[in-house]
Image (cartoon, rainbow, N blue to C red; front, side, top):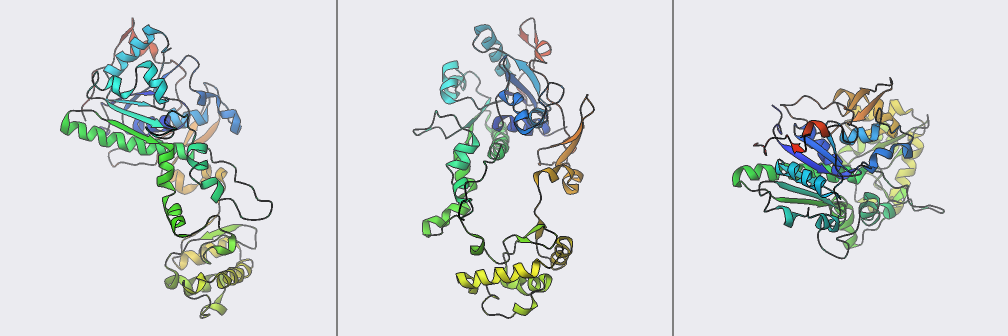
Length: 395
């Protein structure tokens, strides 16, 4: 039996963040019913933006977020369809949504309107900016509510003549928020078993940004400045280019412990005992730091990438070649652990899709699944206008 077997989730969602939450819950055994308008989730049409197909037969981006769910189509502007939606909620353990607060209030689907009617239901909402403040009703995409307003895009910009802000990340913050929200829902369900009462659970893209970037932002209160130039980085913590044109990134936090081993691995034996470089404190001097990095650059430029990685691994130094996004789909480590899962579509296309990375001893590793077409499960769930779901489950 899967951890969430018997738990029913009603998901009123669009785009990425809330659907990713439902996908995580589905892999853990929950019955997730996604409710869409007749127009469908906008994410169904997003694929061509990234040169992906987007049809009922093959829709990789949408499938990643919505595989394993049942699909119901209801026009909630129609009172009869809203009545059907409430039939679903009456059988729900969890309601997940990313509708804007004012839209939920207008439909009577805000928490205050539902908590008495469905006292055991866990109400989970994904917001742009939080419940309070001047932006409480603002729509939110992670590019804006998280990466733009959280400092990432501005402060990760390379500080060089002609530089410009990096191209915005796509869906990264959404997936983080959806996964965290799934964990919060699990906690609320656990508490329901002790108290008998449901709860309200929320996360916002903006709030997640404050949390995600907190290590980087806290120091700014004491004068630490972003962005950092290449030669402001730690000598054993910046990317280096190898002879065959690859880039490698080492990360060494215990500076003195690994200093000599790093020098030997990269062929920099001549500076092992140099007092300008051999302690972390010495490299706080900007001139020493730059000179050290330049010395390593010259050494590493003489080595092939594979050879250098092997040397660093033998020295127990964490390092990697810088990969491309495209490499994820052939990544042996990801495939063998089920983080990437193969799928074959009816048209014969064979690709891989990312899977929620949470694993349980009681569960098989999640596998890729195609999402259902809009309203595919209406007739199964509603017979003669009556919902056929059972009552709310028990963990």
